[in-house]
Amino acid sequence: MTFPELEQTAPSAPSLSRIKRTLTEQAIAAATAAAWEEAAEINRKLLEYGPEAEAENRLAKSLWEMGDLAGAREHYQKALALDPTSRIAERNIDRLKVLLVEAG
Image (cartoon, rainbow, N blue to C red; front, top):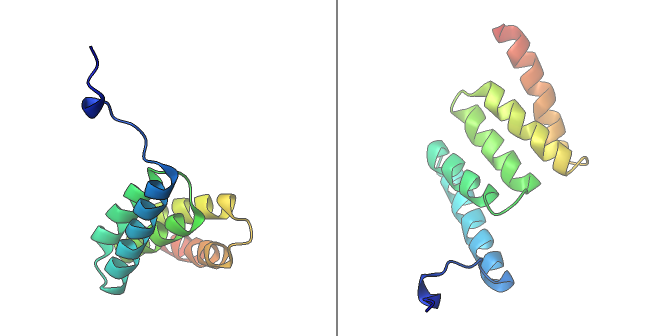
């Protein structure tokens, strides 16, 4: 005997798209409100659904704002690996290199 209501299945494509869109909107709203920890948490949740350069960029910005420069650099690098044309990631990696050298 099976219990389909207890079996967890992956969300359907339209449902997944809706979930990702909602999380993206929540992450942007949290960042706009300077709620950096919340923004980081939401972007991490969004990344659980698969790689996304924009979510990596937003996570990196949140980490930077919280003072985690090494973590920010790591996520900007991930964003750049996913989207080699990302000017946001490229520019911020360069800025972080300078800050990290100054910090030692």
